[in-house]
Image (tube, rainbow, N blue to C red; front, top):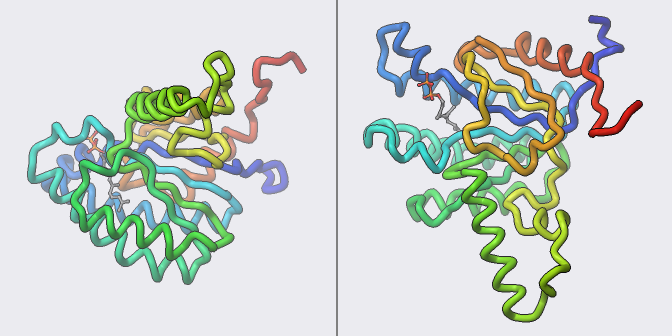
Amino acid sequence: MDQNELKIPQHVAIIMDGNGRWAKKRHMPRTFGHAQGARVLEQTLEDCSDLGVKYLTVYAFSTENWARPFEEVQVIMNLFRDYLISAVDKCNRNNVRCMVIGERSRLSQDIIDSINNLENATKDNTGITFIVAINYGSRDEIVRAVNSISREVQEGNIQPGEITAETIEQYLDTRGIPDPDLLIRTSGEERLSNFLMWQLAYTEFYFTDTAWPDFDKNELLKAFEKYSSRDRRYGKVK
Ligand code: FPP
């Protein structure tokens, strides 16, 4: 495709799937795949930023992932620990604003502190916004939003019957962030797995058989090419 015809999505969301299978194929523990996945994620953030993407949201740990073997959960949490600390300087050097979505109270206190520190240290950066979903589930996010709205109604701040889609958006973890334009899921799986169900209402989906640890700039460009050829009508007739 001619570079001039390439449309760059403003907001890209990614379900980074296939780390475990990728490692198994190489006779390595699943956690080896997660470590490689973390490296690929850093490169993808850089590639998205270079190409002019404004928001990148990634599904790093779901509310369901706690059911994995304890050691695997621990390795993933340690990857977050390392990342959240090293990201402060890296994001500031590259003008990246970093945010975390998901329910935090189940995370270790040191991880919660690192998240708060990273968000605060990068909040004024004006380049790409990098959003990491940790202990995130769309149903959980919506349940938390409904509970918060109910409290506002009880306190008389919101009138019953006046709740709109905009009200609900204000209570989601993603408040203030435009909806994703493109969702990429790697490794051959074609489902949403409780990721951003409200926000993906009009998003274009792109599925690839490539496992997350093998994902690269070429794959990203393939997804953008496919996205460029789609006709987004938002339910209207053109
Ligand atoms: C999905 O592959 C991957 C995950 C559940 C973990 C994602 C985590 C990372 C990429 C690393 C760390 C992220 C940061 C922000 C540093 P899978 O394990 O479900 O693979 P499988 O389907 O082959 O089993």
